[in-house]
Length: 44
Image (cartoon, rainbow, N blue to C red; front, side, top):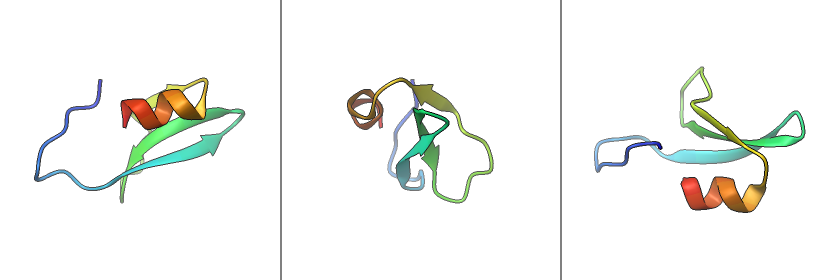
């Protein structure tokens, strides 16, 4: 699970290769990939 606190940057949900990725603004790596958009939004 992605940890959340007031000092972290914004999270983005993006489509990637038929799945959904949760990434931080400005990050070069994708920490989490899930199968549905709904799951990605819930996780973010």
